[in-house]
Image (cartoon, rainbow, N blue to C red; front, side, top):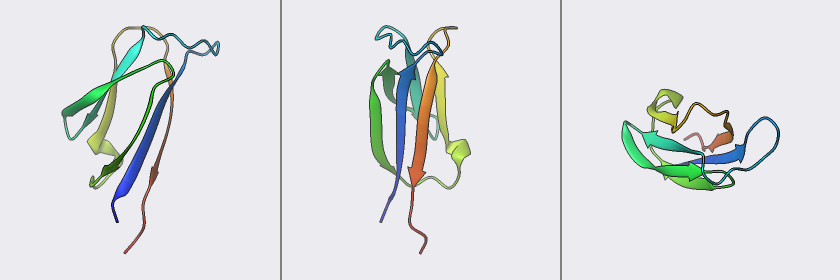
Length: 74
């Protein structure tokens, strides 16, 4: 069973979804892709802790993300 991470770009603090503003998603310093407004991902991961998952905004604009990780202890 692999852990899974869910990340969604839900827009800015006014609730507006802007498809032109994105954030890079990196796992263990490897770029996975860019999530633009309204985009989401759920993928299996084998990371040890949260420091292995990063997001980097493409601009200085406010971007709000929702995220969670699902895992099963052995």
